[in-house]
Image (cartoon, rainbow, N blue to C red):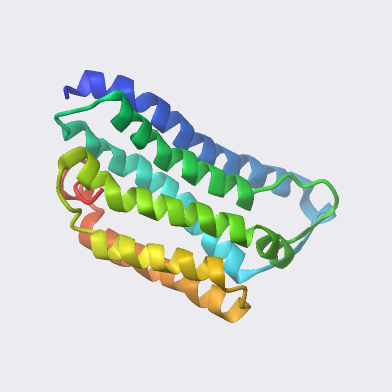
Length: 195
């Protein structure tokens, strides 16, 4: 597919992905505008996963460029391409609710959204696992990392243990660091290949 056609096709995926980034930035801005009138009960697990979610949006935007090399781009594959940004946006929406009173209790928020959020993560990592085979007909070099992410999402889904969830959030950061060190440095080159 030529770059002009890909740019047109990828616009909707980019917009959906950008909506997740914008949602996070708008919520952060709202929190900051409230200043001292907003009380926040901090939670490391929630914070680690939310910042990871933001960086995953940025990384997805970066990696979608690798799809331009596909030879057969059809409506069904286009819908498949849109599923990743849509699922990521849904997960972001769960992590960034509106503030309706003067307090945000992050441990309670995480407890409440964890089952649905982790389900969206399971679907995101399944999507990531099959993106390279769908668009390029081969297994992604980063398959083992995506499988570990998927395992982490499944474990987040089945356990509500706070220590286990914290350990899994740290594990997500380790996987992110490994992924970037192995694949994430060159726009349009090897960095775009793993997806």
